[in-house]
Length: 307
Ligand code: SF4
Image 1: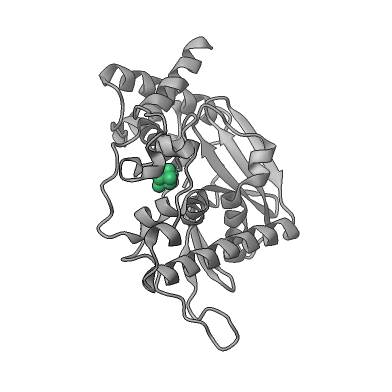
Image 2: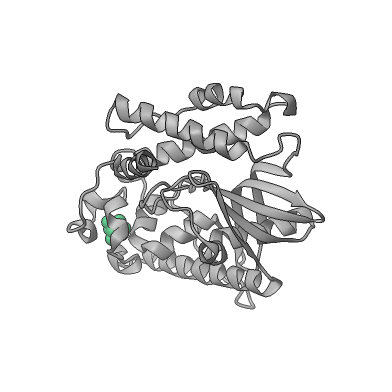
């Protein structure tokens, strides 16, 4: 998990909490293979790829450095995702539009908004997204999984991740990922998403069934961006994930060996810094424009107002 609202590059995908001090140091076996697999989620790998320093703060530093305030777009994304999960938790005959306000209200996350007025506006917008999206969904069709944790082992990784929804289409399984940001993504995004590819790989392994198709379902626009993977493209995604896993293990081994943390896990300053929870304690984020926690939601509401 997971989501994302507006321009903010923040992943709201629920991810497995890191263990104390992250992973154990790698121990190499006789043939150069790790004896222990690197336990990770797609979001954990992406965190390192985006910025190794942010990865260190998130997964290794204990106690975890104090984060900035909660982001409203994360609250909005989480609220919509939970309402969709709970909608599928109802018996099919109760999956009606009338059930949605109660579902959304029951697990609404209120953090990060500018004020009550903005929060109320966001609630109405989110309700509209859910009503519009679910109007095109057959409530009698049971997904294979909803917020389903899937996992698979490779030569290097013990991968796991929570998939928003797994559908069955004919004999094959399909990965569905909900998007609630201002921009929904296109087929390039669906093709290029490492997380979706890894979900498809893990789902196929876990269910012993073909799973190649991945879909981004953008609730604000009602559009679907899809990509059909091949065995080769899924294998490439796994190879990339393994390469990242090896890089993380090497950085952690260096850190545990006494290396300077800033060298083992260097900063990668860029546009992400404005949305980084650790910006205040990182020199790399010093010059990044300050964003208010509700900025991405404000953008979403502006777009909705103009439509
Ligand atoms: S502020 Fe920027 S450079 Fe610093 S940890 Fe966050 S993303 Fe990395």
